[in-house]
Length: 321
Length: 239
Image 1 (cartoon, rainbow over the protein chains, first blue to last red):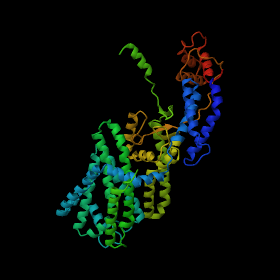
Image 2: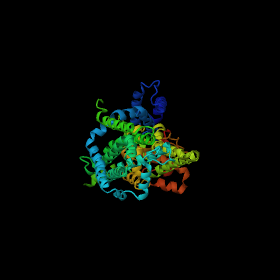
Image 3: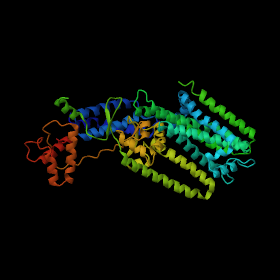
Image 4: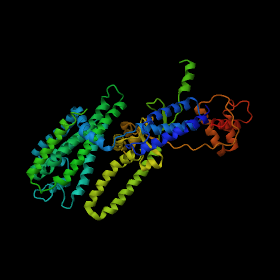
């Protein structure tokens, strides 16, 4: 068969496939007319592409078929599900499953966050001025001002609005979470440093404020969002430690392959952690700072959220297929 | 290694190229053209410019709202930085506006369009690729991998390729179609066609000089260049 006969004979098939594929790509979830024989038509097209190649047909024919085959391939094998089903299955099953699968590292990250916090707490309790080893005096003054008892809004200056603080907390939380994760690429050391530093900082601040008699405003402020924020920072650190472990002990893979495989898991955990940090930022801006709710209620809500977060990671996704 | 094997191995080594073959479940390979760091930096610059304009517009609009406006701006900043590339890559057939302008798109390693999880993974790791400054990691990673992948691409198993365009019909100079004296491979045919398409833009001397490279193949013919143009017409399907 001469190349031109080949084109004349199959031209109409190719146009039909092209039309169908472009419709399918434009509206991935629509039900299309004639879609039932699309796979069969695509297999024919693939055969014709292979034929054109082995027969050394002119390049423009091969290129045309290559383009068409790629197009149809994308239409046939491209993702069909929308964002919501993926988000739903991630939130309800995959995220807690992933965290449980790597529970050991989660506890390591948690210890790296809380043990320094406890140690620093003991130190600052004994000698409050040691807080200046972590913060400069201006920051400490700011801190005392924000948590002074009897203020209408806790944790911010009088002129700051809730929306402004929401935006600020988003930036702040996510950048801390992300630094904690990305540091894992330095053999896990960056993550360890970030976790330890955040632990020291939190321990110092909490104990210092307690020492100067500001415990009540401070703890009712952090109660609401602490479950999400502290757990999410531990999870970010866990993601970083996963990367570090893949680099240090790649097992049977090359280091690069181990890193790629692990990164796919770690990044999903970090996305979950980012979502938790968003929730934390929202609570921090709109709930934690309010004084309209009695302190006892805020402590109870805080405790309930800790139970909720714990139950989520312990029990969700256990009945998954 | 014997001399023979040396020769065979030499023939097997493919030319350096940015074509990446993807095998489909149907058992054929489809060729993708991978895009390198330079066009991708340009895409980034365009997208960055678009986002910068958006921030300037928002900042001007929200300036009247004081601290509330600052909050909205920070939230918008977060949303755009994190979701601008993701949304465009998922809903814009794998291309942010910058990529679209340069004719690039993101696909998975197996050639299918990038989905939600792929787009989110590759764009979250942008921040790692950005380290230590201005995409240092990303550039090193691109130069070390065969398909110009930055770390985000490695983790998400994606690749940035040139969008396949409809190939325009070839314009070949006038000549009498003649079959080549030997059976030519596809690559050889393509070389001859590319030569023929370029002839009008070359000086006579340069065209002759180039044609002289294959004088032995066209032996027995007087004018090598006219011979090649004839083969080109034949290869293009004229008889």
